[in-house]
Image 1 (cartoon, rainbow, N blue to C red):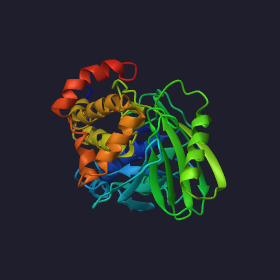
Image 2 (image 1 turned 45 degrees about the vertical axis):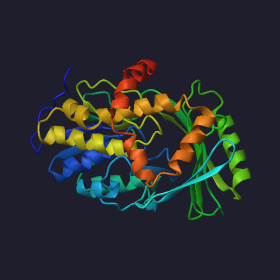
Image 3 (image 1 turned 90 degrees about the vertical axis):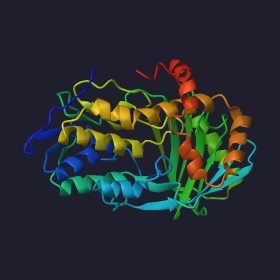
Length: 357
């Protein structure tokens, strides 16, 4: 059923469930337009399950720089970030591939409830606009926007954050022995590091095993110390939720890059569309189908193909990426829903029918 939200008068209160990236972004956009916004968050604070771990804000799926996009939405980049123009990949046999770009491929940011983190910055911007955030409240009554987080696990990430003496590096290993159908990564910047195994193969049994194997491999590849480690684990949801009475955005709707799991830029996009649907009395369902669904379909096909490559296939793709003039454009083209994507999409959707509700 097509989801169309009634346009609210600007004195009317908008209720949002979940103070994640998508929920806070919608709140900021709406508050800037004069709406009264209230957010109910089930945790004790925003980003309380994060510990300053590094994450990548991808910058290859659109020609518009992601920081320019945030600025256009009225969101200040008053959080810590670092543009990354070089990513080092390792194949299963430890061969090194360095991919460099003229424009940033990603922006590294930190997640959590500290002043330098993205979550904290969005919270402060929302509060400064008069948005009310009610913590420790897992509500069940109707809301206008649902941003309450992942609903079904399709992948799992296990890792640590720690202090280190490692040289600055953003790197990934593509090896099914370390991260089945996924990837492991090690990011060290300014004496702080995050090391993770993100795997996409169920069942999610003994996830620490993959993390320990990842740690062992990286210790053989790079020389670094680990001080003050803190472990964390996170499910990743790719299950598309059915849009009913509320607009469902971000992870709550399974809006993710199905290939690599980058979801922050998409979370912001879905939040923008949710705000537009309220401000302009437009159908969120139609906006979503026009501006997000083609990307998700391309990502689903990309995942279908990736899972059939195996370690030797991953290595061939790394060799190819290492030779193209601009790896940023190379990656970006893979998310355009092309004729090749249309050909494989029915098969991919059948394959992942348990995830695509």
